[in-house]
Each structure stands twice: as structure tokens, then as C-alpha cells.
Length: 276
Image (tube, rainbow, N blue to C red):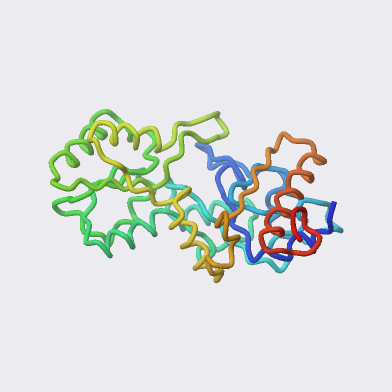
């Protein structure tokens, strides 16, 4: 296995997911995934599922942790039940070194889009993020914004969103993410994607996704992190490493080494698998 420094030669930054990667949510606020606080801060032990991320996995003597590795780190999430401030506060209580200006979340990005395009939304969202839209004009809606509304995904609320869309000459449906489900401490939970698809089908339209896996969402995160999109591997744009927390450490290291080798080869780093 190549040295981590060699593997990281072409890596400019790390985008880390939050839900299911740093912590599992729940009615009590959720719990941090074992090792995640230390991985982000200092120890570099990241035996968890990582989406759109490159992590340093090793022992505390061989890798300094993401924030102390010299890499730029940004948190990129589809979280749409907690306002950004509340989410960051929750993570800080769990011990994470994180601030609001390090997080790219869909609700603030959606607000920018609404203002730029003069859109007035009908909201089908969780009560926890309504405050994010306080400065947005919602009179006479000309679009629908849907997010992970949780218990507010009632028939009445879904039907109202459907009616608003069907009354528009050019219906616009904006979805904060399109996940199928996610894990909470109580088990798997349906995500916004299932309800988004229902409205797409009923209205005969295609939703605009703000959040992962939208390329524009990732580009926004890169811009905020100070990394130009052209610095990412030209063939793939981004490299994702999917690491299962159930894997043995040896398998984690092997999979991550292969991922880092791929990104190194994309930059032509000497000694990387597949590089000249």
C-alpha cells in the first residue's frame, strides 16, 4: 500500500457528508458514530460510510486527522429537518469541531435560487427549517419547495402541494435532496425522494434537485471551500469513496487505498496505479 502522502498528492480537499457518516439522527437528537469526532479533528480513524469523501484511515501516529492533515475540509449535507444553526449546534454538542461557515446545506442554497429567479414557494418542509425561508416572499406561490418533512408528509399536505403545482402554467418543483431513505437510531426512515417522485408522477414534471447528488450543489461546496471545479479529476469531476462501517479495517484500508490511487492516477501522480 502506497504512503498516504503519495496518495494525497492530487487531492485538494475533502467533502464530508454528515447524516449517517458523522452521526445517526434520532428523536433525542441522535448520536455520533464511533470514531467520527476524532477522525475529523485529529486521530484520522474513519471506519464509517463516507459519501463523496476521501478520508485518512490509519492509526493516530500515521495520519493526523482530516482537519490537521493540511487538506481543506467542508461538510456537505442534505439535512433538511434542522436549520443550519441548529444542526451545527447539535454537532458541536457531540464534540465535532465545526462551524456554520464550513457547511453547505440545501435550504440556504435553495433560498439563493428562489431570490435569483423571483420564485415564491409553497413550502412542504419540516417545521425545523421554516425559519430558513423567513426572508423569502411566499405570497401567491409560483413553485413548490419540498424537503424531508417527516410527520408533515400527510395526505392533506401532499395534496395541497399537488394542487399548487397543477394550477401553475409552468410548474416548478424544487426538492432539497432526493434520497430514498436514511438511518436513524430507531431504524430506517423514508426520505424526501419518495415524496418527490410521487409529485413528479402525479404532475407529469421533473423536480429540480438542490442538494446531493446535484453537480451544482457540489460545485457550490467547492467554491465555498476555495477549490476550483477544474482542479477535480477531469473524467469524473469528483471522486467518491463509499466505505462500509461493517467492513474489517484491512478491507477499509484496501478500498480507500484504491480510491486514492484512482484520484492520484487522474492527476498523473507518479507511482499511482494506472499512472504513467
